[in-house]
Length: 603
Image (cartoon, rainbow, N blue to C red; front, side, top):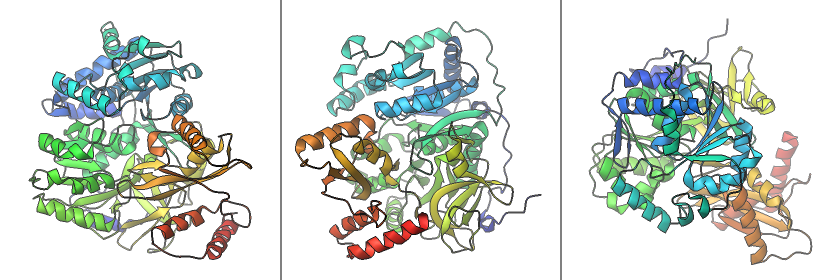
């Protein structure tokens, strides 16, 4: 029998349960169960287009029938490359209802990234936003995709909203004019794959008259989300029905102030664990309303608040900085705002203090509460308790979830107050990475207690009360506006340029995004920096990486600092940037000695 785990944080549980009973059925079945209790509640609101739970279930069934008619079977993979639109969430649950697996893709991913995701998952069907079709079309012949269903962002918008949105996005160059209506003559058709519109797709389902029986279990694979894992190389995270359902139930139980009919602003994207698990599945579980927003605009956020009066806001720290800066919000009464959740990046004590003061000034009865988690455990698994807060802490673990701090790379548990690697055990921990046993083995490890623990690659410590403190990342990673950016991915692309000898990417401070990427580049011998070479490098980066991964700044160097064993000393570059900003002064030789010591330990 396994040894009992230490859980000092449980004394801070008030009305919440220490243990939950998780149903052994699909993610769809969980929200169907909720819908039957709240049929007339509003499930989602999309620019004023509201659907009740009763209507939502009918939409899911309609799409499930179309998928069945197209030949999608149990365990088949359907990729969903969509922003936060009704079609995106309907498709997610419809795929789950028939026992297939959804693979969630960022629609702004570069064409080669999308190709990689499609091939990792072995997807045979793709549901995508229409403005992504031109780049997707270029790589389809290199995938197993049979058919593509394309959807317009305005598909489910009321007529006025659709017109306004189209005008705005075209003016801002978000959707090119040439693909506004996606006529084959408006773009170069590079593939021979069949493509149909969403409306045509729905018509197909009317021919399927059999009963769709959902008999799928908690252990069945439900979805694939993409994460950098422990090394920064994109990987498909395998999440089961149990993972998703446990996450929804735990979020509801631990947050402690959510209730049926609450309106939740779903800004976090559905292809992100935070957005899918917290803003959609959890909300649909407790009978709330997901206010779907396909994009975020800080300047018009006051209009969103005024129009929808959300009870709950879930976002990254940059969202809350933007709210503080929006002068149009300064005189607004926010007494309807009863819960504010921050995740995806570190919330500074300064920002929390300023935002809490701002909330109080605007008559909101709540304070901002911080959570922590990873895609590998369905997003949040640790959160600030309702009535207990410790400065700098990310809170305490969810019910049935256990945290401990170990010496990095081992299962040796460290004493309270000692920094080490954060590891997690619980029902939301992923099944593993798809088709990547090596990385799965490095991330999911069986400890001497007989349990499987998720090694996060993050550094932190736990105090005697069980409150967890996040200190940083053991792995190199940059978080910009809540998105994870992996320097080695960017370096690999830049280094593939014929004129580049080597490169190094680090994170530098940004007034709004908190951190952005900066690339240092050494050209091949005999070449001089020029605007032509820089433009060529940028073009390569923009073709192969998602927009949020693009370096904010580029700097050419004749050489890069190295350790005595020849590794690029990226810490030296970080400190040089800090010195530019007046944060500290240091001696280069001392820094190289420090980096060299780290090399010896790591080697």
